[in-house]
Amino acid sequence: MSLAALWPILLLAGSSIVMNVAWYYHLKQPSLGMLAAIGLAWGIALLEYCLAVPANRIGIAHYSLPELKTMQEVLSLAAFVLVAWALFGETPTVSQILGFALIAGGAYMIFRSPFG
Image (cartoon, rainbow, N blue to C red; front, top):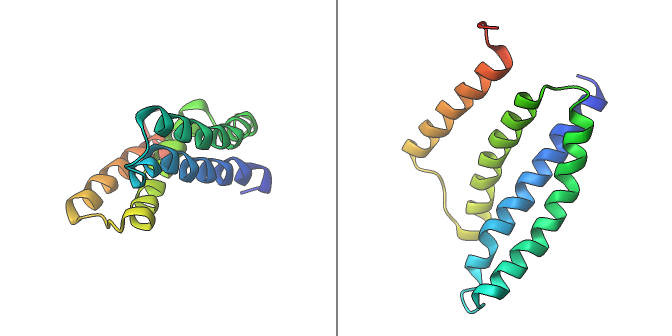
């Protein structure tokens, strides 16, 4: 894999971590009002867009649109597990791991589908 093809994956990984923080970090701040929580999440999400947009613009030269979306979804799930553990001390259960494995199987089909 070339470095040029690796950049979109790295940017999407960073984007996924930042977006999961945007989605869930405000839950650690229960004293914030709803509008403040929305503002905090949007502020964090702005950084996510600064990573996601270049990832997709660079990535389209190396991957199909379905492949880019699949990478984003799989990386988002992995980032969720990391953020849930780092911010909330939650670890995935066996059934959640199995569910993620099924999703990974679907992602595999996007990249290696023998059906065309």
